[in-house]
Length: 155
Figure 1 (cartoon, rainbow, N blue to C red):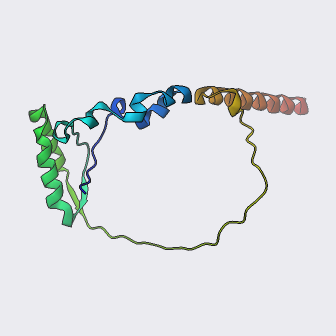
Figure 2: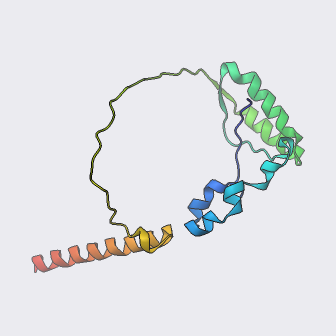
Figure 3: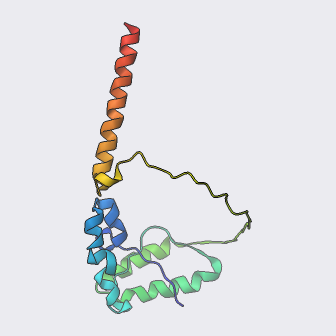
């Protein structure tokens, strides 16, 4: 199986929907979330590729990286892509890699009969922005009360 990673702009990345404040109901009905961006259904050679910054790779993978970077020039804006690729190649840094692995075993956690109840009123809203706003108001109220009590003690 061939694996490669490329940058996807935020407008074509369904994972960024959550950071844009979409509510859960809209997310359930969002075809962009369920199916992904439209370019995924196109042949891979038509996908936009974007190289940014400095590329680091193990010395043993240098040839594969160079090959993949050469293959990205088959896109629409060839001259722009070639310029970006040349800039990225100039910044190519070869690093030696090593993998350290630690294996740990643990016993099964004890089962508890306590049921966790959240103090956040999830049942009243399905919007993260509403929950954030409510939490902010409560924290501001608590801060105001604490300040008021402190002022009363000082006078």
